[in-house]
Image 1 (cartoon, rainbow, N blue to C red):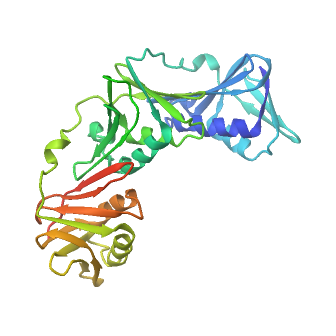
Image 2 (cartoon, rainbow, N blue to C red):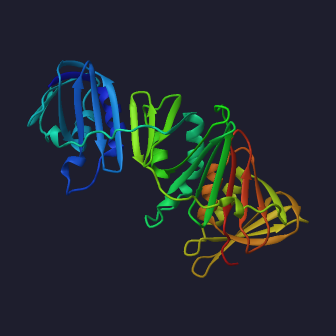
Length: 366
């Protein structure tokens, strides 16, 4: 095997496939990256048995071949080389890497031990604008559960129907829903439950194109864009029926400026170190919301912010870490609406725009 490729293109390719490198020490080959030079192309693959990634770049191939190299080592080498042509030669047991005055000789693993890239026959597909989808995923993926014992809650529910994209995520303490309009084929619908971490990683890849094709099989979710194919296991099961959690009315609705609210919450929460609870006292007559926190060791803090309020005065306590996730997802220059039913009922934050966003948060004890 012998081929030459540009440093910048190779570094980008390695950044892409590195997302699939495994950490299983009992299978050393999973920590490697598979290289295949053929027909003027260099194909790179990685796999951790759950995720498989394939990416192709142009290369000057003098001799076709395949090999597997340590992912960590090849990444460290390439990122420290100048932006110039890199020549690779060998592959059966060793691989030489030459770039200007730098040269390396790497031990390799047998390409025959590399698992074949998963084959797939897509049952359903949809093509979506990647930038819009990325914006939406950023708003919900932090709400996915981190508990491996409940894999369904680690996923994001994606529904595409009637020119609407909807994403939903929950960890049982909170719920995030966002939707936006896009052109979809008439009469067709697409649904899938996709790992939140996978969804976010794919859309942040440097090879992402203007549109991304998402497809499903019996047990796979497939992303295809440009010269990249990303395959992950489908999350099996039924996503929680979140619609029954959404109330049809509220006792009080509060419209607050996102920047003012975020700044006030940041100051008040300085005291809430041991106890992440922040109290919200809604004063309908005074048209303001009082934020307060207390700690037996640190003391107390409070701040008043102006708000447009409809309905009754009431109080509720919320985990400020979770509230910050909501605030960070809302457009910074817009108003954020807070709808409350009572101190023991969920608080609902809403923001509307190109992407409509709803965030339901369970209260903590006052």
